[in-house]
Amino acid sequence: MMATLILQTCDEERVGARDICKFLADYGAQLMASGATCIRLDKNVRRIAAAYGMDAEMTVMPRHIHLTVTDKISGEVVTSISKVPDTGISFAQNTELSRLSWEIADHKMSYAEARKRYESISAGGGMSAWLLLLLVSLANASFCRLFGGDLYAMIVVGVATLAGYYMKMLLLSHKMDIRVVFMACAFVSSVVGATDMLFSIGTTPDVALGTSVLYLVPGIPFLNSFSDMLYRHYLCAFARFADALILTCSLSVGLCAGMWLMKASMF
Image 1 (cartoon, helix red, strand yellow):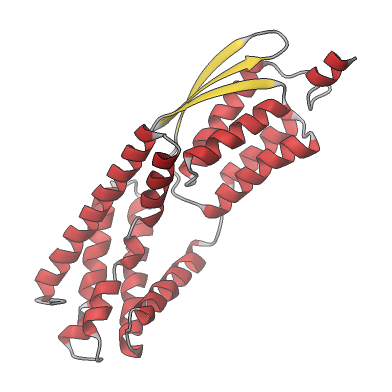
Image 2 (cartoon, rainbow, N blue to C red; image 1 turned 120 degrees about the vertical axis):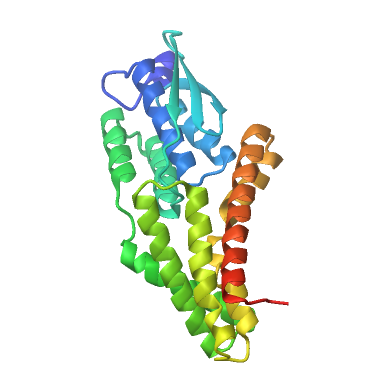
């Protein structure tokens, strides 16, 4: 009786280790792509595996998830590797995928329903691109104000962010290399941001120029790399830090090119 309770799963008919392993590998890859740290990924995957009567051992690589699942009943061992998709960071998707792991564990969700929910979350369109464009522009203009920018500087930064972020969406939709995208967007935003200095519109043109590219700073990869290092996921920590550093260098190249073109200087 006790063994029956322990081995009971969420489905009326027990799901095999092969299906669970493939599901968890895909789930982990999607969760990592949405911006989750390695510790969250590890906890969520183990939580789901335990709910279906499985043990999971995972190796998180910079571009792949290597997962091995062991069936506690049959002893069957299955390994699956899933590539981390280039979907971009999404806090909404990160939250929904984490919530799914708790729903599976707490509410004994069936495998079929869990798979359906996962595919729905993965295919979700998220926030409207136009609304996101507007909110990013307003947020960066607010950053300008936090750094002491006046009203004119805020307007210039808002327009610079609008132009740069729109270009970012456009270039990414055409599968352009992310490093080239960062250079191009930083160049466009710095050129627009330098107009405050060029035409002496306001009293804080240096703030306008300096904050015009803040929306491109890869803060989440930097934070995630630090978190992964604390939890001894050194390989992913180094990879994320290197990616963030390269993007920051790309941003700097675009900013310097824009300043050179506009003959502008923040010093």
